[in-house]
Length: 280
Ligand SMILES: C[S@@+](CC[C@H](N)C(=O)[O-])C[C@H]1O[C@@H](n2cnc3c(N)ncnc32)[C@H](O)[C@@H]1O
Image 1 (tube, rainbow, N blue to C red):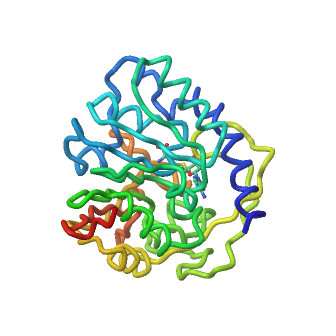
Image 2 (image 1 turned 135 degrees about the vertical axis):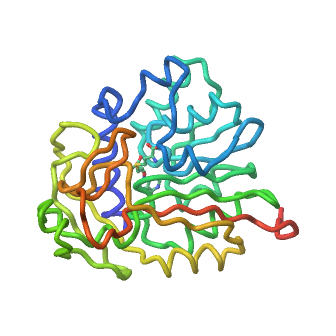
């Protein structure tokens, strides 16, 4: 497992500098004090002022610091040392208060003693994690009673499509599959220099990802003791997951005009920890 994690971390370490300067990540808007989260999260998350928030897999802390800018007390965790260094530097530069912790998701309970009102997880997260039930237990344990887990990410079904399929095939409903939908403990090995967030071609091309179907995601969260408030499926996503997707004016990426049937590209949910389950 370490081999997979080390390879993934090398790629994420390498992507931090390109992302800091790419248009995909609106760092300048954070500096200007007017950064918005993506439209899906923006609509669903609700006010965070006064909340203690834990952002898991926070990358270089852009969303974490955006939440801090809105009055939340934030902690971000990521296993990329480059990302955490950049996050701390960005906090210092912008004068925003935040705690950033370098560590693997599964080591988080040993690294972070606090409990939170909100655990925030978004975009490109659980595909890097082999054990979803373990992830959900960790997220739930970090919550105070009455606290909630907010999650937004690629829809598990959207990961199966062949990225080589053209816009015409999608529009005609001739979707071609390439990747597995159901979970396999053995990860999918990918070898790709491309980056969704910049024109950078990576040296660390090899990564390992795990598929997690919707049933595994929902069952893991429910088994961790959280009660679903909503689960939404969206025909849009925050990045160009497939070349055939079209970027809309609001920055979300959607299937080309006329695609039939319209299939989900992302999924989001809020799940709350009932009072009385808090053990510490
Ligand atoms: C697509 S990025 C998440 C982007 C993030 N939502 C944001 O606000 O920019 C995925 C992040 O997961 C982190 N990551 C991947 N595997 C991890 C693990 N096992 N433990 C902790 N962080 C991990 C990577 O370092 C990377 O920063």
